[in-house]
Length: 335
Image 1 (cartoon, rainbow, N blue to C red):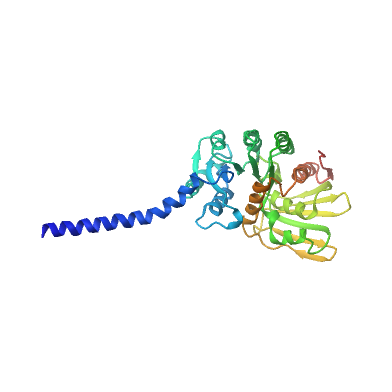
Image 2 (cartoon, rainbow, N blue to C red; image 1 turned 30 degrees about the vertical axis):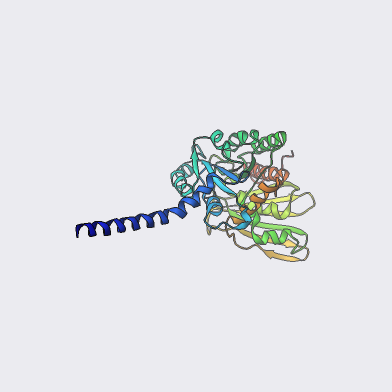
């Protein structure tokens, strides 16, 4: 009887162990492929202080990633983003744990990251650190996407692009709002030539950044996606809860941006075209931007030119100067 009990116990234990291995096996195999990801498709992240970093990781490293992401996987990340913005620093521990669930290795610094990856997503929420963080990536000749804002000044943004040109490294920066479906339709000619546009987005202020580099850049990116380059001057009206910036383009067109700090947190606008007018739909997540980034990693061709990104920076700085001058028109810096 005793031997029979022992035998049954052995069978039960073995069965449970087999079940445990069976349950762990797929998960282990799922993450094993990250360390052996196809060379050329190993993604590194700099800065785990923004939800963009976790959103991109989930899309690329999930169990059934969309084929449009072409097998790219996040394999390593450097946690530090902002050095002194509390709202950013507080997110880091949570986001470290989130990306680790998807098999991402946390490394101590950018140099360690560069040894493990082929391409880089610079995700730090704080634009002031982007130049410092981009320099080693560019010098290592790693194709680089820089999430908005590219920097916290026109000067830093230009230095990034100048260095990228010197080292012949593809670099681009944008907001995800540029790739809203309705924006893409308008750019494809749905209403003919764009004659003007009024866009809006939240425009929370952060004391270490020029006003719109922090958040208003989202709505300004939409404006430039629709209008293109060629803005000559801006005029800004500022109140505690709202900003309105009117841009005059060199062909006589007018584009406006409304920055919101009260009311509903929302994005959108109205576009005026030769064939009709249209309103912009809702923002539906980051995958449309991620698809553009993956295509950029594959081709080395940026979907947004450095000239346009620099003009956006010049627009933001001119808007700040107009505010300082009580709403007087201010011309944009020309590269």
